[in-house]
Image 1 (cartoon, rainbow, N blue to C red):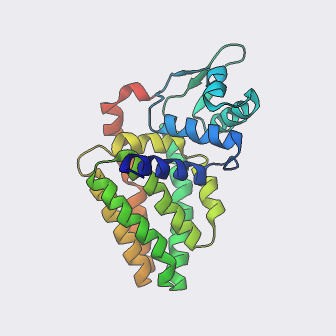
Image 2 (image 1 turned 90 degrees about the vertical axis):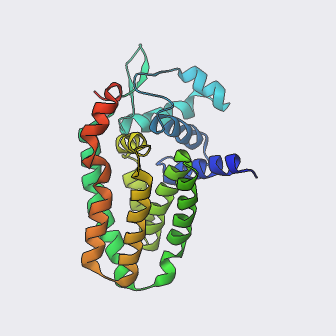
Image 3 (image 1 turned 180 degrees about the vertical axis):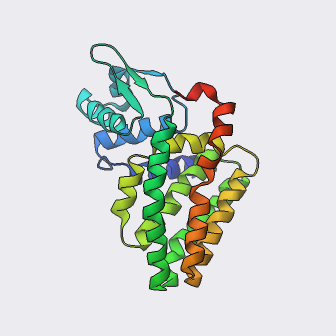
Length: 239
């Protein structure tokens, strides 16, 4: 397997594992691919979607396409106008803030729960993913870096024994995912993410709950702290 196909496999796996639709099902495959295209901004806001074309591209009937679009509508990534058209929405910053508020509360407890257990082996998957993410950062491979970022955070939820909570949060994170995609190319951003992940793992390993909270809060506030600059640089993506 070459580097390009490995990167594509990681991206696909990250969406398959974090989506609300059953992985491997026809609807799940369509959902994962559409969400990948939307959150990576390959399908930018105001793109018109053809359900017939989507069904043909995925070699499925209209039913799984309809189910996938319904899930994306719940997340606010798509809007359908009856008897008219289906569009990719613009980025909703308030929705992103609400999701971040939810994610912060949950992920703080996830990290503290792992720290209290004092089991260093529980962090091995996260550490391995972080090593891979560093390589993706060195190669400036943003899709792979993003995919490994999702898998890193999922691995923490798995270590805490609550992976279903990650699926709950991931199912409404589309707007902040798009903000992050706009933010990642900024100079130093990927290095900041990697450093934050290292500090979170170190705080958990040391069992220092105060430091765990400080590091998680600092990390999860990064993108929204830059939202003004992101909007100024990319006004066409926002309502």
